[in-house]
Image 1 (cartoon, rainbow over the protein chains, first blue to last red):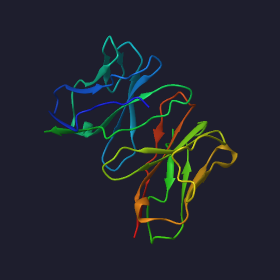
Image 2: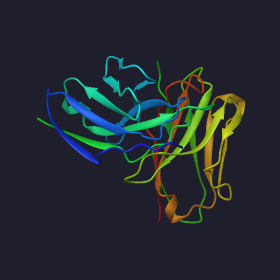
Image 3: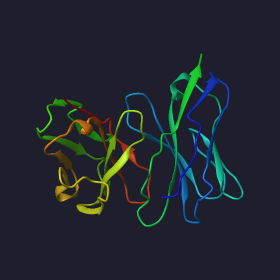
Image 4: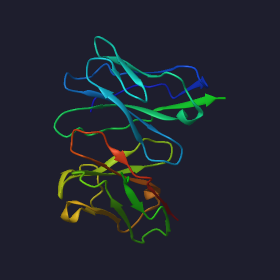
Length: 110
Length: 113
């Protein structure tokens, strides 16, 4: 499985934008970039995914580098409820198996 | 829309005992997953079903873990006998099909003493 590299932790202030980076230099042409997050004591929650173009949804935006070797999850205005572990995962192939790493622990300060 | 249901939410057993976890996926979801999440780590896929067939069980310790999905709906995961290192949260997830986002349940926290 292709690997991703994320910072162990990041901090942000409430109502400010947050940019969560992810490096995936060994990404293959068929790998989608998925982001999930896990709030304390809950199961992971889907955030967004993309292949080549930047993607937006009601939760976040995903900016994908032109060479696809890195991506950034953008939370436009962080709230206290966004404090969670964010996982960047590459998935593709025939069964879209997701291999979770340790993710980035995001702390949001009031 | 009801989410993925799991029970029990918590379970404490002694080593060498048996335990079973139950999962009810979102209605109509063909794909069901069981993950193990050890404290401080990301979830690790144990087994993946498509309807009632196994797609991937390469990381399931088959000498002690078993899972089934009868009639392609509910699923059970069993550990027999349990070891101390099985202490973890067991997460069930479902998705409409193999290529869709996964919806996770709240998990079952297992403590083996």
